[in-house]
Length: 421
Image 1 (cartoon, helix red, strand yellow):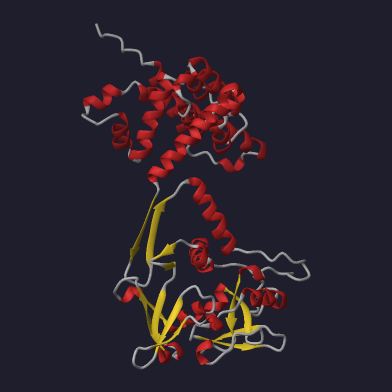
Image 2 (tube, rainbow, N blue to C red):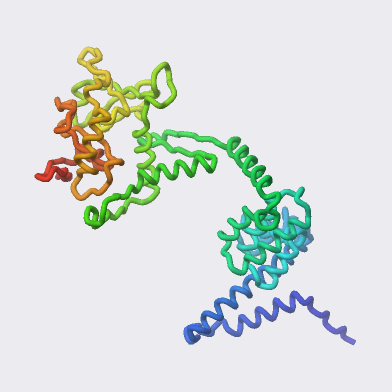
């Protein structure tokens, strides 16, 4: 007598039905659905997807023996290998599965019932993990239920923001104290992790990498964006067509960082080597006047990476951000940053009142983000006065000292740049 087949486990039976149902529609075209049917299908499929994910995580939470049989490190590693998924996401799934099975029963029920999706579940789980155990189990369960309730109307990003202030909703009497503790811990952690490194790449650039406290990073981002995309504050009649910036955002931020450094006031920086923080550049008078020449940076080290072109020196000299030490034929110092070469603050104000912004043709960068430039180069005998001065934005100031371009004044006072042929 043949023994009857063993009944399938209900989970396996469910998986089998799901596969059979999907097989039935694999060749069916969605084109013929009405608009309302497509919308309904998408909503229902999202619910089904969340419920299937919840079932998968439930099985993962009970699958430690599967990993052990195959000698895998854990069920996340086993799952990544056998399903050809990314190891990081599989490990994250395994962690969430353990949390749902052990601590987040309300969240697990919501995921199994399709009332939240996996992305929302991750956010809720992390928000609850961030709450200290000293608050007690009852309060944590209230926080969990509150966040699960918000999942019906909030995106993961919105849930994340609510999760950071969940105590304001469920326990306002302790929220302020706990928020202070959390912020103090985060700030202490940020100080311990703060670092920055500068590595010259040997091609005229240096790679900067680091990790900053969030408050400092936000401030830096605000400063850089003010340099990267200043907006003209005049009327539409003054500025009918703002320029379209086609420069990639990362490059604009990099250029903005350079502009920020150039606009720092050396007199307000800490003393460095007995003097205000200043970089000295040495070059001969002939080099300063030449279109193509190189200058050395004193105190910056040795090597080609510590040199600048004469054109860049002439541009920087307009703003006194770097001090050129001009040498004669016998290396005697002819000029050490003469004050008469630099535009005074009063002259800057007068130039802003006169020019109103960058005077490059069709440029709308406001005066606050411009630099004073000598129309006739100082090295060629130009004078530091209003007649020989003009305001240019950082981009056009670079062009003014770029030997690949020529600049000419138009009758209305604007500056037109033309690439040399």
